[in-house]
Amino acid sequence: VVTSATTGFGAGVLGERIEEFLDAQSIEVRLLLPYDRGDLLAGLHREGRVIKTEAVDEGIAVTARVRPGAVHRYEAFAG
Picture 1: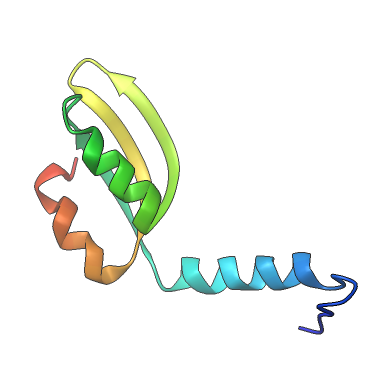
Picture 2 (picture 1 turned 45 degrees about the horizontal axis):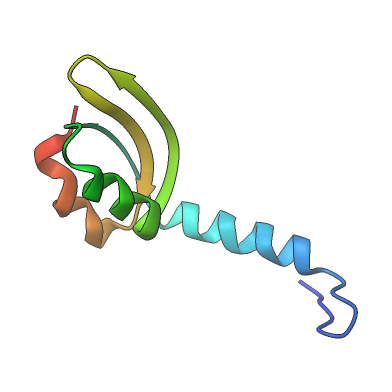
């Protein structure tokens, strides 16, 4: 990707390519987080990309993409 630090030319395309690369390296997870575990949702925002959240009776249903090395932190909440 051709970019220019001076004019910003190509910066948008570069950002898109980086996002595509990171998505290809990540795993999609579907989780059900308890309402009192906002720390887990914050961690998903920090460590990955939250695609969708929905408040349900049992907690927060989340679809996200995370690095393979971070998946173990959320395994107990798979749903």
